[in-house]
Length: 135
Image (cartoon, rainbow, N blue to C red; front, side, top):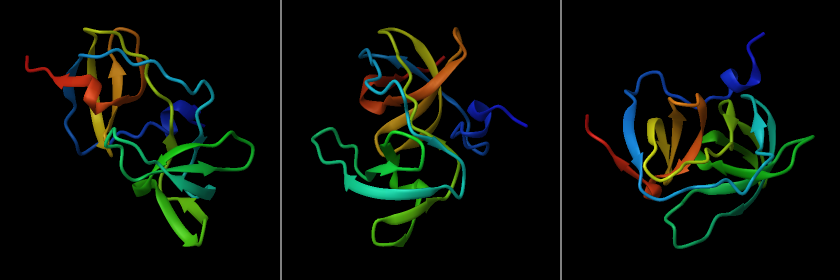
C-alpha cells in the first residue's frame, strides 16, 4: 500500500512544474489538515470570503478529522451540503521562507501545490506569496 502522503499529493502529471521564488513568508495555521481519498464523504459548509482572491474554497468535514478548506474542483455535491471527494486531497500547507525556491505543480483558486527540493516537504502556498522564477 502506498503511503498516504503519496496518494493525496495533488499533482497533475500532465502539467510541467514551475519554479517559484518565495517573495513573502508563509506559515501554516493548520497543524492537522483535512486529508482524504477519492470518494470520501464530505459535509460542505461555508464558502471562503475575503479580499485575498481565494475564491471557490469551502470548509468541509469528513468523519474522524478536523474540518478544513477544500477547493470546489475537488467536491462533488450530492445534495444540499452533502458531497463526496472527486479526487485524493490534503489541505497541508507548506511553510515557506523568503527567498526559498519551490517547484509548483498545480494551481487552484489562488494557491499552488509546491515542493521544496531542499527538504522534500510539500504543501499549498498562496500564489500571492510567490513569483515565477526563470532559470
